[in-house]
Amino acid sequence: MNYDELWRRLAQVLDEGEAKAIARMVYEVRYGLTFTDLCLGKDRQLSADCQTELEEIARRLLKQEPVQYVLGVADFCGRQFHVAPGVLIPRPETEELCRWIISEVRGKKEDVRCKREDVGCKREDVGCKRVEAKDYSILDIGTGSGCIAVTLAAELPEAEVVAWDISAEALAIAQENASRLDVNILFEQVDILNSQSSTLNNPPSTINSHPSDFQSQFDLIVSNPPYILNKERARMEANVLDYEPHLALFVPDDDPLLFYRAIAGYATVALKPGGWLYFEINPLCATALQDLFRSMKFSLIEIKSDAYGKQRMLRAQR
Image (cartoon, rainbow, N blue to C red):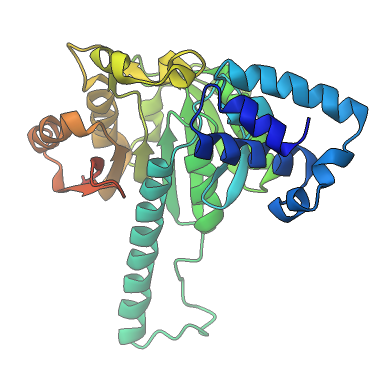
């Protein structure tokens, strides 16, 4: 099977443009062939074993299994992450959330530098305690593949990052991604809804410690929690419904703010005074979320739209 044959087969269940894009991804990720290579006919030179593998890949894709699961990788903020059916596939809107956080944190760091320099502190002064030190702490709740935690740890190397998830399978994948991408993150198995944690990296004595042990520890808490209403299922694609973990997707129709309420409640304890809370959100719940955070005495609440104009991100300050 060559590139043309693969995309034409995929076009049985996908539109032509998507079929071609997925076929190119298969050849590039699995076999290292660029589009130029495909134009030169190098896809016709693959071994018999590769051809057998291609048939299996095509079979899975024709069943509308996401190509990221088939290949085991997904791109996020310029890095490649291992993904499997136990974790959500990273989305572009989550990249926007990360970029917002990175821009804001870097901006705050520059403000600190400028203020110190205004009073005579020079960057070359040996005794000047600058923000390059490990003095900024971040917690990612519901880390999944680790895409948010790893990205923030890589882009903000001065920060200490902790990441929680309820799923041991997800944490194993996240730890693998952190190790491969060479960042240090403390991963813990935590169910934020019942506030019981069992640590993966700490000594056994800390197992079943309560998350409130982290009182006023974090400068920033971020989460992309489950936020899709059950009633929205009818509008969702089969490749999401049939393959991605429902535990990480859906919330009850009668309690759509379930995870936001729990995380915000924890943030009132765990965030340092003046600390920030960032969320990816369901646009249907934007107004209700603003009301929730006001009632919990958060300030500077801001909703930010994604590239498609949907209200997709929220931040608030303790």
